[in-house]
Image (cartoon, rainbow, N blue to C red; front, side):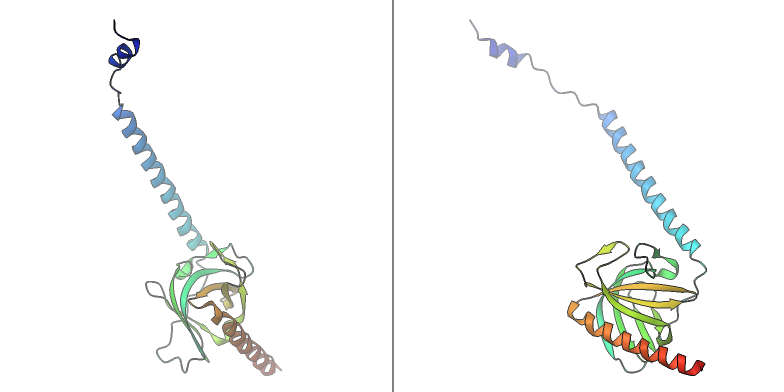
Length: 191
């Protein structure tokens, strides 16, 4: 007489795979991801269109003068001043990239490989501070150098992170000393 567990093992059938249903789900998921990506891209373009009133960025001069400070690091983007989530995307200001910053008497040269380079003229610099975040990037307290500058009729905040975070304090002091000098010169000329 045979044991009951042998019969149970012999009666097991092979697993059935419904390939049509699996392929259907994969195609549906791929279409959903493509739709989300397309909507995000359209939103980015729409935001750029809304910010089309921003003037063109000043070009980096070939001979900017002697450098006060130089920094190598990352550019994390620009936002409307005081609104750290309102990203500016017009003229490539929303593109994150590596950056080489140079502070001269002419202003702040922002050189970005793979993105648009620009100059923030000294008279447009307003202030610099240490902060912890800017549109889509949050770091430890004081881990981000944020430079506020005027562009057209808007004030913008641009976020930078040095490869050596200890450099940030010197940048804040240098930019703020330049802006206090520029403000004093402007007020004296207006009188």
